[in-house]
Image (cartoon, rainbow, N blue to C red; front, side, top):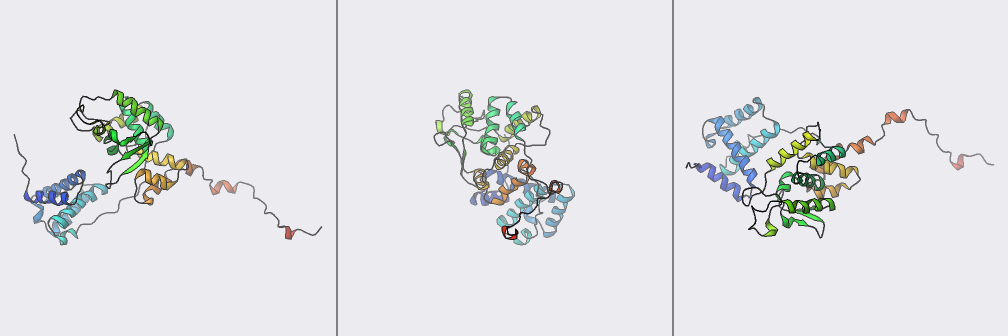
Length: 306
């Protein structure tokens, strides 16, 4: 059996991340960033110089790394130099590139209806319904437990999601009915010994684990292809569509902000740019040019005396 050797530098960085309560996904990303930098240097990152930082950033640009991925890598390196190595001079050489602002890609109500209709199984339909009907992220859907479903108050409690925040979302009658159908069909052999409230709604075949977002993503793309959706939509489009369709139906934007768990209203306001129903309903000034000009009403004081 092989053992993985952890260098003292990596161990110290892990301890620094644990002390700051960084989530597991963030920690894995930071470690990958440092491993990539070390592979570029062909030596330990603690021997890096200012010139090494400059050349590595140039290397990322020349190799075609996306702006998002490039910024993510440099964020991990900044943590290493600023926190673990206390090399503020090297951390100061790291810069981030402004990412292009793109509007979210959403599905129309008809496309969403077709997607749910062609879901390959009851499980897939329940998963998609939670994403679209409640505006949940993929990770939030797969991490749902029995205790998070409050049928009495008709809400779903999302615990410690992005930004370590809790929030409540609505639980519609149709979603509740689908969940009850799934609970009867759900395999229980993998968590039979667990307390009922702590059981995952979508368990993995591994004891105590939940299904992965990778599995959910694969199910979504299979359904999108079967539904004939030609747009390059991703699983997150369910959440985008949830917000956009609510906005088009006149839901207050601050309520949508709370349902999505956004800190800033500006983040939610971007959906006003993709609410096609609202945009299409605006009368163009070009159309107004062809309409007969309305005559101004005369004031009574301007009328001649009788």
